[in-house]
Length: 84
Image (cartoon, rainbow, N blue to C red):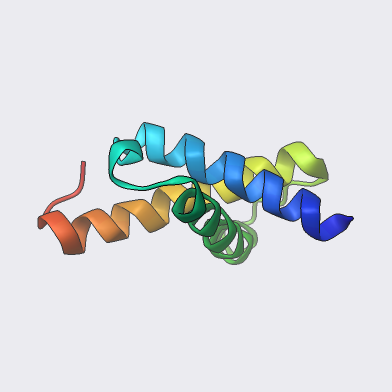
């Protein structure tokens, strides 16, 4: 059950990050989920290193969103040569 929640939160975070970074048209739902999950791992590693700890499902969503935005920023740097 927790795995399903992890996928849903990752998908929502990846979708929101793709909207913010204006990459929603270039990727589908599967890539949004993957970006959200990888972003969750990235955010889970990055935020505690900065001294920020968020708990609960809303905290996990915010963490995954921040991580996904950072991940898409890195992808934009490599694919377009600049960040938006």
